[in-house]
Image 1 (cartoon, helix red, strand yellow):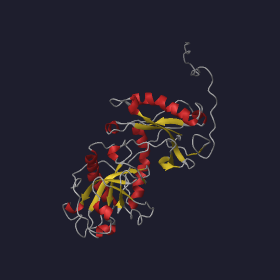
Image 2 (cartoon, rainbow, N blue to C red):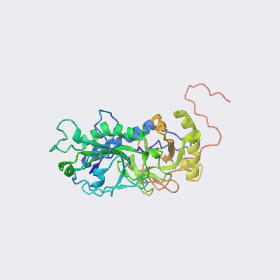
Image 3 (cartoon, helix red, strand yellow):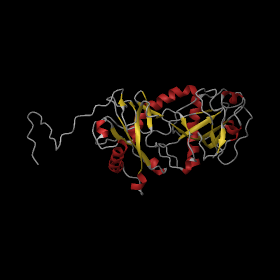
Image 4 (spheres, rainbow, N blue to C red):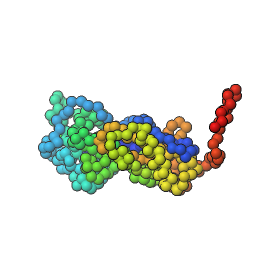
Length: 368
């Protein structure tokens, strides 16, 4: 069978590139705009391999079966685990870059173990009105399966999680569907579910049921996020080219135990917390400036807060003049290269308070 790979967890790139110790931030909305290009690119590339970026449009639901054992398997070529999977089952397989080999060994596993898909509901196309999915019908193809996921799996996932789905969080809505051979053999039952995908669409393993964990879209400190055409991608070893490095995870719930704080209040708190994290991670208060890096963080939005997400990342990277990311190699804890060259520390900041040079004809600047 095949599975789509939606936009899902949006790793949260930020702003970079100012040779100053004072941090700048980029809002969650802006960071997601920065990821739009790579998300669109992933969709285009994924169509050929049945990996489609996700959406959140709603429509009338096809019948789903979250409580019963689901439609009877057709004994096609899809395998027992896929054919019998119901809501709450967790599935895993050995990933392969060859579409013909990928997902050939799908198996049910304990959800406490690592897996790549948590089933939210079976979706029975055999009851769909009309002849589109009837016996002998043509294989729908990637675009049609993507439409079915957007129309029917998003509501199914929200029902499955009891309205606790974070649309900006770590997990995204997915759809597993039969291979073309399975479709020809008569398989018409799909599986809606949840998966964890990187920015470029690669499905990543996760442990535990989604409903039982914080869905915050964060990475562990020391994680480096790769880069492709100046846009962040999936985690890589820090010796490999990357866009930025995560230096800390901050739980906003400890500072704001009540209602959601405004973006301004989040920023006021995170400026101090992330600056301290940067000093500790890099080894000194001057390291960020000397390496010409910028500290940045993301903000939580209301949908995430209501779903229970509370954590964000503090990260360091460097912005290009055109708004993308420069390519960094090496961990920011040690020696790094930026676009292949060692960073040149800016001149020392003069002691005392500097006064700007007045424009010709301007009135004298008043003294203290």
